[in-house]
Image (cartoon, rainbow, N blue to C red; front, side, top):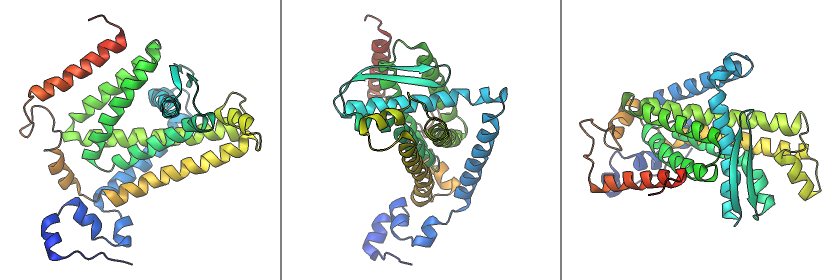
Length: 305
């Protein structure tokens, strides 16, 4: 067990801030969930149970169908962003109603772009799980998702299914932002994170381990590597994705120790619900941000200005 001591001057500076609480916690208290975190873990466990049940009931599986497609979108978006980072030209992103997808690009580094689909979507899921432990972190995650959505809409501007999915999810995010001061948004972000991680794990097992799909990322990766069969890469990616899943929970436990009441108080002054008593009036800066978003959407739709 260790404890980091901070002198009184620093203590007065930090006060009761989250940074001060983080620095003065020992290892045991860091990983021990408080009451709010226990509730979050129970909700996450219920999500896993419900998703597992709905997954195998044909009629009820339609309830989680949009979220399956969203995870496929994360998968393809991860391919595209890794391609962008390795100087590839992204031609398009397409989603298939049968829960498939394709990212068309030229150039890039296949050793990085091929694994990026599974690993990227599981990393996104893990990050959303972490943010699901805190209301303000969930708000930030929603804004980051909005940026990713804009890029994806640009790359898939001819794919109607992607547009319907992203606009629908964006509407749900805005809706839950207004419920209970953002608490509903926190649990929604947590659900998307759990769903993304679970779908990624199942997809790796189904496509690369239990059965060999010649068009899968692992099969293509095995062809360019030539040293191991696709099942080996599937097992490796499965282990990494599972590690991301676990890390997402652990980081959430370590980073966000605030109680529900503290989160509510912090959330009331950080990007508050418009119209609330703590909301900041929309200034010229706010109108500028909205204008930029509208211009981006108009550009994506190809509407002449």
